[in-house]
Image (cartoon, rainbow, N blue to C red; front, side, top):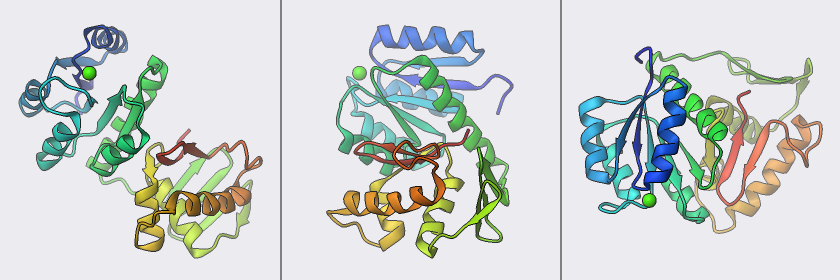
Length: 231
Ligand code: CA
């Protein structure tokens, strides 16, 4: 990664693009802009940005198709930005290889936080960093010992609970979709997976959250999936 990370913004709405550009430049990011999918793909191959912000509703190629094309040759982190209030679509883009999503309207604080997470993840992947421990707040996960510790005391999880929590910790900060989690847990995706997952997550939360109904660690992304916080 260069000293100043480069963000490629693929967005046809000029007002939003201007706003994002000003914010990113103020934070010392380099911002490349494309107003449609073709131009976006061209800039991606020419400039090799560190992260892509991709609007789903583009004038030429549908954003999901742009994402598919990106994934055919690049593992660059992609944050999907969408005005469509369609959770199933967001989940679908995450399953198609997007790293994260933001629904309009979103705050610039939120956008910058998601960009930082995406950059951190790509740096980890590039450096093949494989921490033996994941720690956030009072929660500690020791991968080599398959141990979860909360406030210094070991938490007893079932093998499936550990498996899911470890997967979330390896992807901390990223939202994992219902589909991905269900596949990991049960090997298949069932119609009722969102409900079964809710029950499953409630079980984990009761073991690691001080207030399971106001979770500190495992956040619900309504209609999409779950995210383990990374700070
Ligand atoms: Ca648009």
